[in-house]
Length: 98
Image (cartoon, helix red, strand yellow):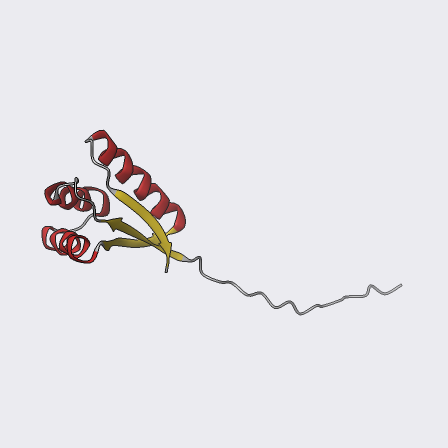
């Protein structure tokens, strides 16, 4: 008795995970200096990058702190929100799909 061998072609499509923007929103209570320090500490921005993002948030109402995979973006939002609330500031930080 002879063994039968079956070969099947399978198409496998691998897609990269989506990336998400972490967006800071302007408010009238959170000092720019605090936002700059937060960007440096949590988002590893340089002094210049942090200042540019903060000015964008101030002038345009919102600015992108960084672009990350969802889980990382979610963690950065949680850390930023905790630090902001602990300091007594109402900074709003959201995640938007790229």
